[in-house]
Image (cartoon, rainbow, N blue to C red):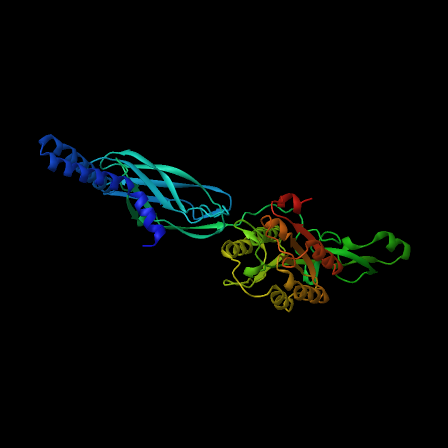
Amino acid sequence: MNSGGLSGWLSAHRKAFILLGLAVVAYFAAINRNQPFLWAIPALLTATLITGFTWPRWLVRHLSVSRSGPSRAEEGETIQFRVVVENRGWLPRFMVELIDHLPFVGLADTSGGSSQKVLGMLAYLPGRKHQQFDVPVVCEKRGYYRLGPVGLASSFPLGLTEAKVSRNEGIQHLTIYPDVFLILSLPLRGAPSQIHRGGYLLPEGAGAAEFSGLREYRRGDNPRHVHWPTTARLNELMVREYEPLASACLYLALDQAAESNIGLGKESTFEYAVRIAASMARAACTQNIRTRIAGEGQRSLRGLGGSGDGHFQGILDELAVVACDGNTAYAQLLNDIGAHCVRGETVVIFLSERNFRQPATMQAMATLCARQVHLFAIVFDQASFLSAGSLQSGRYTDPLKVEAELLELGAHCLMVRQGDDLVRLFNP
């Protein structure tokens, strides 16, 4: 046992040691005085010690507890757990705490919090009876978590020691998805190799096709396309000719390099990037825009393109558990996905890496532009994600300088700072 654990154990049993010391002193006093009534004091102290150590253990015996609740939730959402406690013994139980292991509790706190949560206090439960109650819990951080087991603890009546037992009935899994916010429109461009099938408004116009000119009528042409003013002037049937509009395509490229994550907990650049990526994916998939995602980490992202609610759910499942734990440079990821991009596709870039990585990343983005790929850059103001005094000169990039270089490449840029209202930022 280390020094910290030893000091904690001594502190938890301080009352017991004091009573034990008093009992020893009382016994010596009774022996030396040889008076019968003095033996009552050490006997009472000894009985108190025995009661303080045995009663809590008896209280948690013959109790079973189970916890049920949703298997999916969204970051920041408050969910309800149903807790059922059953007393399988004949005698009543009272003053028992229900303690659950919830790994997502305390993760939003950058100082680090305990994952143990007291679900409630069982004040009194008769024998052969059960009791149930609901416990609200806030889902603080995205991820895939194993909950439980639920524990029972009691230090009643004297608080000399705490008896704890765990019940495996409370084990379950919970997936917490990123908090998705509303994005009304995205500055996307069309990819000519794709035929537009949805109702999304591209910058050039709307609809499934746009007018390209007039030509002579051919057998099989739609009569509704006849241009009557020109037909009357030339005395020859002329029809409007249309060409398909290009369809927008979205490629989300997450930087999963551990060194690129600035900040702590939910207030870090990577958590902001995941939330933005999930929101952009939903905005695109609901408009039937082909969307895919990429990243290089311990759990790499290489999703196939698709659209619709089903495809968005697949992206959301990946983003729920993705972590910033890789060591691949962002420039290498951009070079890898560049070979698979189609002309006119929009690639979303998340820039939060260190200063020495910037030249290679800029070169990779220039290569993407040469392939006629449209860049949508999310530039993080790294200084806003750092505590005061921790920003070191030359280590982090200047966001204004990065933004200027991106504008020269023709990219659409958006500056993100810690604490920004993302809904307002993406829907000006």
